[in-house]
Amino acid sequence: MFSHAPAERPSPSDAAPGSPALDARWRAATAGWRPSSIRSVDQDRTWAWARHAWEGVVVPAPGAEDDDADAGAGGGDLAAGPDQRVRDLTTVAALLELQRRFLAVAAGDTHEDEVPDPRPDGAPLGDDEALAVVRGTWEIDPQEAEADPEGFAAEVSGFLQDHLAELAEDVRERLLALRGPTQVFAELWSLDHGDELEPAPDGQARAPFPLSTDDIAWIVSGVPGPEKHTAWEWLIR
Image 1 (cartoon, one colour):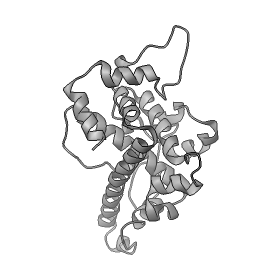
Image 2: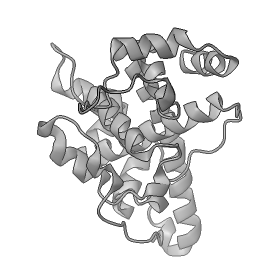
Image 3: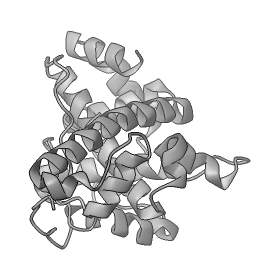
Image 4: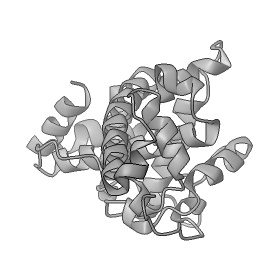
């Protein structure tokens, strides 16, 4: 119906480290995403951040009910609609949009452009799944596809983009509540400013996230500038 090319495998997200218990969910949500889905200098680091942020959003905080995370990530009726893989996938898409928008603002682009439909970038979201996502919020008649397939596909795509714009706001607020604005800002800023991170000791490897306390402190207070101020104000708005 939507004529999107089949997803490519393997996904560039395969290298993103995280909790082994969530590996299967992560692979199901990100298999097939193309490198073009990442708009930053360091694609591997961005996928690592997406995995780190995604786990914080989808895993309940200590003492929370299991459904709380899905409700926070999916929003209202959506949590009871599409299955877990689709909710995980749209959360990943929303996080990548948050990352893209943050770096755009940091680079001086304050224009709120349209959220891209993630399927051309290889997001493994089927036609019926995309329709289920948008029908969780908007009324849309599948019978319209028979009369005007192209128009119906465009309508679904537009609703999906609107949904992801709202979900990006939701995950921004959830991450700020979970980790605080200082840590979230430092993580996002580091995606295009790896030179502000302390190098790992020779011969030692370390996970890119979470950032060390020293890295967070250096990014937030070590190298000031108008770009940082603009990005900070945008993030905590």
